[in-house]
Image (tube, rainbow over the protein chains, first blue to last red):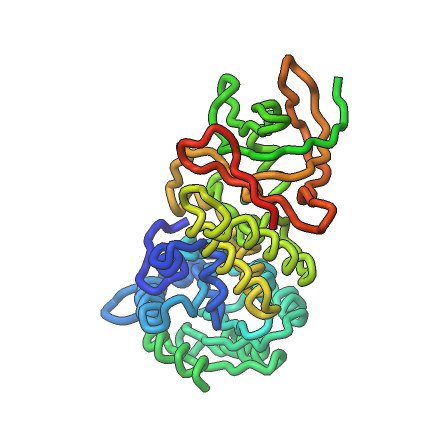
Length: 185
Length: 197
């Protein structure tokens, strides 16, 4: 668990309002599931930074711009709700099905889901099966290199299956803007 | 030996360390302190978050366990408003508690906001808050959101005390005309202050 708390995160809003994290969840519009698996450590994002570092910066900017409206779940071999707004980098594999099972707890009216990943999950079939049980649309953002068609195609299929949209934010750059576009569209 | 009794408890204080290391509250019965409520027993009844946060959920602020039953939520809200209205409750912090009850009901009475709150509860239950907040246990013990009641409880007698093991039912103390007893303990008083509403 990362102890950093970014401005506009659920923890920050809860602290500011002197309420619990669960109470601050009442204003959440979107749950962002962000891939923190080993491949996100590739240093091909802005200024030689890793995709993970840039993704964290972009998510921080997003939460500052939309305080209390974004919940973050980081996933790799495990999945973790990160109310402080910063998912821990943990490396490992990409168990999207596990992350979706955790996110399903928040599948209630008015909350949407955005999966951000740079690759394929451990089991595409399992992830699609879990996603099938969602009532809300699932949007996806591919943050891997444009040449990786397999990962991009999977995220596109995941989104299509659930009336979501699939977009590209190559190497995690412009991630905040892309998420905002999805939320405002 | 364990027995089950109906206790006409007129006031319950804050939990403190009273018996060695165990925190418990004492209850006023028949004009004196006579009942012991161990803190875990009260927390279990009122559905309080387990360690480490020790914070009451919004349901806990209404004195009930998590439920989607709107009728139950409404009656719990009315009961707490009756208990904590600053015109009636003479305790320190009554206004804050009254506002907390209002805030809780504002969120829980609407299906959409209640669903989101429940989602937040479910997600936070999956994380170890101790790592997030580096929580230090409060030096102040738990406080029952209700101060009095007709309580069906199992427990055991020891000297003048009845030690509660489990609360099985907690009803308001009602008069024959339908009015309900509300009690508080004003600062400096020798006994609870009773109002029938």
